[in-house]
Amino acid sequence: MSKQEFTKQLKEVCENGREARRLLLKNLAKEYYEERAARPTDEYQAGNIRKLMDIVQNTTAEIADIGLPEGEEKKVEDWIRTREEAAGKVEASPLGTRDNLQAIFERSYAGSQALGVGSCDL
Picture 1 (cartoon, rainbow, N blue to C red):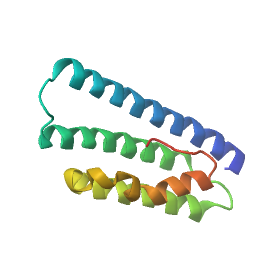
Picture 2: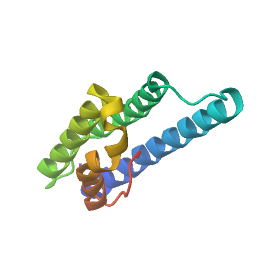
Picture 3: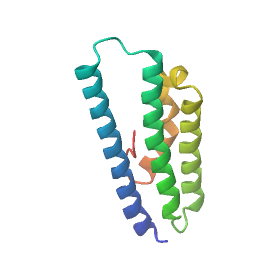
Picture 4: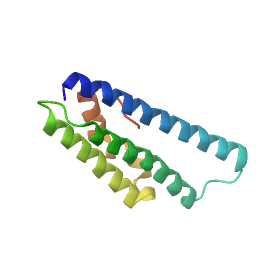
């Protein structure tokens, strides 16, 4: 696949991931501020972090399904692996990682920047 076609498809997948994240956060804010008056429990927060990681994992699977651009196969494979590893780390310990999500996904974000798509879903 050409780099141009890959980038076009990647931008679409990433936009869908950003929109899924936006809707999740909108729904969580509505749920929390309109329906919950109490402070969120750890269980509630962990569940919401897992919902966010589901979006990341689904977006990553869609990215992998696009295929690889000619000449940048390794770069994209490494980026996909970085996304998978970061999401796995958060999934394994959502509460232990909640304050470090930006640092955990830093390499993933750098990879998406290098591919010209900005943020993909975080």
